[in-house]
Image 1: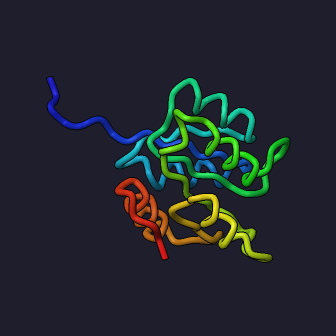
Image 2: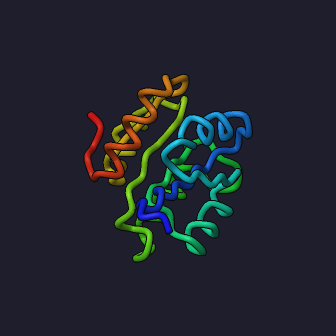
Amino acid sequence: MSSAAPRPHLLYVEDNAACGELVREALAEGYNVQLANDGFTGLDLARENPPDLLLVDLRLPTLSGFALIEQWRRDETLKPRPVVVISARVMGGEKDRARELGCLGFVEKPFSLETLRGVVARALSGERTP
């Protein structure tokens, strides 16, 4: 039997399949990454198997990233779990709004894999990325 701690479970809600796979592969060494391609599917998956961390794009079909985060924060099971935004949408105060909603990080696309890994590790430890 292995005594290794279970790998953290991450849920990445991203409608761009190529970006989703890139993130999954970049984090595969240390994390189990589950993908959802829209906000409602992401919420359903999170409620079935709450992840240790939510990664979310802001531009999603059917339910925006911010609407997803707002619903996440209203769910007592999911509320305490950290959220990190991964998005190219960085205009009009999106970073400020993400912080107001309690997100611990905001990764701008395009991003380096090292930056992504660092933000994820800090968020899982409860540390906010500046």
